[in-house]
Image (cartoon, rainbow over all chains, first blue to last red; front, side, top):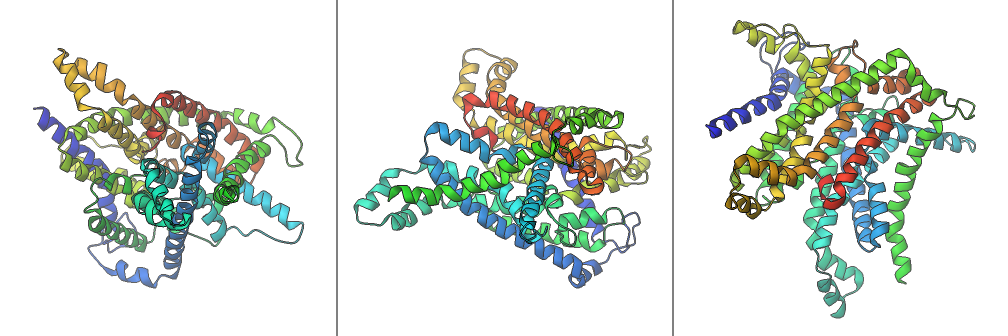
Length: 270
Length: 275
């Protein structure tokens, strides 16, 4: 009885979570320009999306920002993790809680605060005739900022597990600091670094709020494009593109998800 | 020599933290407490006192508390079920609960419009089964539903992680000592999962309280939450001082919820802040 009840409950939650996704996938095949009407099946949106310059530009921005911000956040997060480990406990806790602010704070507040600092910095620079343009650069900075805590949280636990004697042994055997770090430490923490990167990439890909406040007119990612399109109606190509992205991620997961069962959670859970 | 190396390691992220986390937050305080000329004033904060804004704040608090409570009630049994599954099945099943996050979150919320509309998918299904129809689109109910849908994984994962960490021997010891199922749950399992519950609550409450997208999409333009009020100040009205003042009021509630989390988190270390 218990088993049947829990099965039913799982199915209920499953439907709740997947109904919207099913709707979006079906809409991507809808042969009608509005989502209110069903016009039969078509594949045409999957072809026309590649000819839509606006959507392709937004896709390009989204992917470039996601890769760059994840990369830079992972490097900064790695540096932060190593130096935090060497700190005194009290200092470490202070720095760690400051680093974690963007993760615990409301996104709207983080977004607004970044917008204000860019405005203030722009006003400051304007005295010398320079300007800050809201767009790629400001959005990238915003994404790196909210990604750093997640990379630190993925890397720190792995660093803690390291047996420092192996590093010292490498030094004793004549390796330089850099060589010892590369050959001994890096391989041990690589899973944490990779999952931090993947997490940052995912969060950046899906972000709307921070982008909304740090972007300027004329610059769009997929999320901000969707937001502005909602009032006048979403282009069906958007559904097609999102479905395509969703399916590609799923396939990537199936390929890379194997053989790292234990890591699986850390790899994809924000 | 060693000192020099440390500076290069510490410098970049410390500078980053100062420039893009701490100073920006201070900017909100500065803008919130000054007027256009830069003179000190309380008036931006008092702007929260208009009936329309108070209503938005009250509704936000109400809806986010309801959404948090329902998320907890839904996620806890779910986490228990997942936790009781065989190791192989859990990996697969947990992945199933995370996969939806890979679809663009704005589109996923938007899909609920199609589901909930007067002639939407759900009402057509209800009509086919001759059941009474559901007219909740553009009402606070639809917003609450959107919140529950969007943030349920944030509640599930910390609770699930906390349950996974519980030593099976502790549970078995309770049974050996004569506790029944209910006593074991209430006296052993639930207290041990509390850090996960607390972090789940903050992970749902803060984003639900401050959202403006869910209310935008599912509330029509009829229902305003405090997130919408603040967002409009920045993007439409363009009054950063009032917007910052309202944000400061909102931050009080965020700080309260963070403080509660910190309080419970103290003895369990930093692990529970990770999802």
